[in-house]
Length: 130
Image (cartoon, rainbow, N blue to C red; front, side):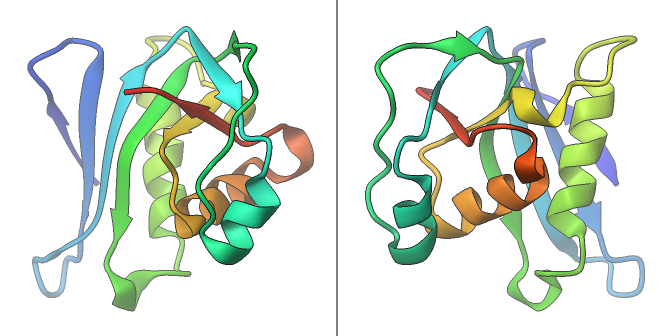
């Protein structure tokens, strides 16, 4: 896992490099947030790539996933999960961000599936404006 600071102290980029090939197999860009919105049609988004619809009332949130990508050959191998785990651990000094305190910006179907799987039954899928 690699880590780079963005120009803003609240944004960070994490990468996962395959040690055998030296290629990037995962990328995550995150930022600190204070609020997000619950994705109201997460099942439709996950199944059919419908446009995400959100609630109108904001809820507290700590971490925003601006972008996450995993090389297609490495999907389903825990790369995205590992990147999210590292971001939760490193973004707020001395604090492990809870899984349900993460939101995605404009998730695709794959992104909504990843977040719902990652959060499990512990919370709603959240979205935010970036």
